[in-house]
Image (cartoon, rainbow, N blue to C red):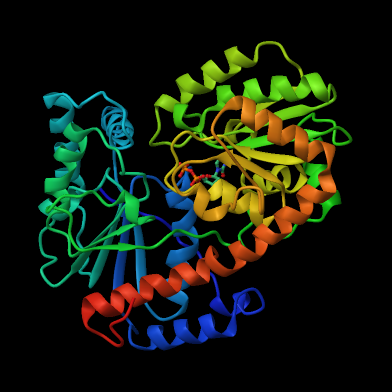
Length: 418
Ligand code: UDP
């Protein structure tokens, strides 16, 4: 029932000019101890959202340094993804709990998918809650070490929902969180380590595009590339607050009547709620011809997201909850002035007033956008400082290093730090 994802090919050597030599040497050293290690990543979807984004880079890079890495996506119908979305919301604090029937659906699909784990692995990394139950039901993986990788903000969960999840997590050998504050204070959490995620500077989403090429692509979606552009790239999800972005844009428009807004959001297959929220966003935008609401359904893929991010005058990420916010990392890496919610992993990435702006409301968001548009040069200088921070802390080779260190430690091969 688990489906293999073709992870393609990437070469670590291509990153030599982007990150430090020391980091590269460390990776080579760790990888030397892990030759042939069989690793399996399991998650809910191969399309849409940050987890898939990371795995498309990290899995082939693990192969490139000598591991044998598979990535498997679990099978689920809407009935399952409706439950896991409710669970995801509950884990991020939504007061709605799960019904017994929903819990049974979660369990049933995890049993089903566990049955599909036929190959033998040394390390199995399970991402997020959807497939967390596979560890309990998998057979024939006796020698394997199991890691639960949490990508969301678990700092203030609905107690019922996290209480439902934790017994499934209890049997793992290690758990990994973006931030220390996300680790639940509960004995059932296995040994926890903190590792933030990263973006791939060489993926089509982030590779350097010339301003002309970026404008050429944006122009094809009907925007006026000579006029100012505010952008938010994110799934259509209440926590990403696209309606708040529209409010902020309306305030900015009073000051800069030529401003346009693009809301670019993919429809992830594990996010059925996305379509409803997409519709709500469309309704909220009304008949304003300067608001462009686009998604993969309009052929917006990675390169197009890159073009929008490279071209926008301000990139907004007005989240009210955010596990990490890879879209923020992506915008900063492209040197764009960024205004983002002061939540979750975003303050790790932005020093308020130094490398970007952190905001708590639509009014604040509008105010910072206006400041950026009033003095774009100063804003670009701030963004360039942010880019150095991303280069050091949030690019894929650093994440690869952290994974290899964890694998060394868990399997007892090589050095034990990490
Ligand atoms: N993304 C995309 N197309 C879209 C919307 C989002 O490719 O229309 C990507 C975005 O560029 C980022 C990821 O999906 O790489 C979202 O990750 P993030 O951590 O920001 O949020 P998540 O969706 O995981 O909550």
